[in-house]
Every structure is written in C-alpha cells, then in structure tokens.
Length: 375
Image (cartoon, rainbow, N blue to C red; front, side, top):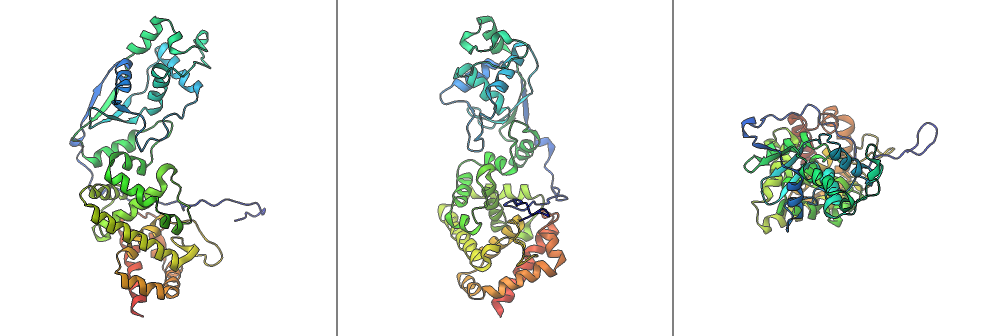
C-alpha cells in the first residue's frame, strides 16, 4: 500500500476491532469478590520465591516476559526501598496457596529475585545512593541488606472460591506492569491445564497458519485469541450469546475442562476442515472484508474469522464438499453481502460485540451458505 507521496505504508495484519457498547448484560455479584489484604515483608516474598518448588510463579505460561526491566530500572527499585519510598501494591491470585500467580508486580518481583536470590544484578544509575553503584546484594552492609528484607509491602490476595468471571475482571482492571496483560493472556492465565493446552494446540496447527497467511502472531497470544473466539461460538451457538464477548469466551475455555479427548478431537477436526475450506473458497481474501474487491485486500477481520470458521465447521461433510464445488458462487455472494448490506458491514465493523451485531452476521452468513447449497 502507498500513500499520496508514493511511500510504502505497512498495513496491520489484523484489522482493528470496535467492541464499544458491548457491556456485560449480567454483571457479577460484587459480594463474590474475596480479596485479602496482607502486609508481608520482602523477606516473606523472597522465601516464597526460594522455595522448591517456588511458591510464587514468575514464569507461568501467560507471563513470558518476566525480565523486561533493564539493570538501571531494576536498580532504581532497590534504591527506592533503601530510601524508604513506598512501593505500589502487589496483586496475587492465591487460589492455590502453594503457588501464587502474579497479577500485578511481575517486574518488581523479578528485580528482587535478580538482586537478592540470583545475585546477578549489579546496581547502576542510582540517583541518591550513588556510592552503591557497582555493588551486588552480598556487597551491601548487613544493615542495608536487612533494611531491604524487612521492608513491608502491601499485597492483595485473590482467594480461592472467587468466580472465574470475577477474577478475569480483576485481572483486567488491575494489571499495570511493564507489559499489561491483554484479555487473551488473562484468559490463558485463568485456564491453565487442558483448556490452555488445547487452545495452544489449535493455534499451532499448520492448517490454521496457512488459512490465515501466518498473519496471526503468537506474541501476545493473538493467534490464541482467534482460536478462542472460534471455540466460544462453536460450543455455544450465537443465539445463546450474551455480552460481553470476553465473558462469553471465558465460558468456552471453562467448557473444555469438562470434555473428554474424543470430544476435543472432534472440535479439532471440524476446525481444520473449516479453515481449509475457507482458504479454498476465498483464497487470499479469506477472513477479510471484500468491500474493495478486487482492488484492495484488507487485513484479517476478527468478526469475519469468527463467523466463517464457526459456520463452516458446523456443516456436515457432504455440505462442505458441495460448497467446495460451488465456491465461486459462495465467494460472489459473500462479496455482495459486504458491499451491498450496510447492516452486515456494520456488524463486522462497529460494536461487533453487541448481541444484535453477532446475531446479524451469523444469520446473514448462514443464509448465503444455505442459498449456495440449494442452487
């Protein structure tokens, strides 16, 4: 793509999605929030980090970036402790008291570990205690070591029994660290085990990467967000949809825990056939708005991926075969739908998480699929 000065402009791989206006229709009961406030010393956190196995997990699957701060920023944290500046509160998911998950405070905990436990951080760039530059923890006078260890922090512990949808909302509102978690990373954090593994398995499929032109990068779990979106509407048909979209997707992750391997393999098979059929029908335009077809190909659209992947996955094998044979007809109908139906275009463009938008795009795609099958 070129601008008016003929300079090359890189387009995003995935189209921006407008989810505004799709508020949760059934807000959770705030009385179900169960959070304990504690004021432990840093030494208590260090003991949990030193334990075998560690009782604070700094490298769970959803937190792949535990050492984002450079040495100077880590050193400033240590300096803040030594000059008695108050630290921001730490938040932990304490559902398993033997393995706290970090909701907020990952970079600060990583810095403390690097300095006190691993002893690999050498202080640098200090503003007030410049005489300590170049020193490691063991080089400090015992009085300063003790001051660090005995410094009290504020920790909020999200207790076992707090509903998953409540935890998700807490994660969304609270995490403010060096790399704020997005919705999919939070979802992944709360659904460790089979759900997270299965979503990752689907995201790593060669067929999925091929169908999406390898445009959905695994960094920040964009690829897994697309897979989870498919799962949400595959497991819970769109007439059951109740905003908001994040809560609906969380429910799908929880559903995977109840399934046996045969059921998950059926989902995997339908997913593979669906994305390959979409690629066969639409080619380079798979999951992309064709309102500028054939002049300008747009980035992948989340709502289109959701509706096409699920709609094709729900068909019988003979129906998919028929669509394969009549793919030119279906492709033409899909172009007409995007270009001529303003309501459909809006349903994949604006407030895409609204109940009416979800219902309209699914029913519209179902109509052109069935019309193609009946020709």
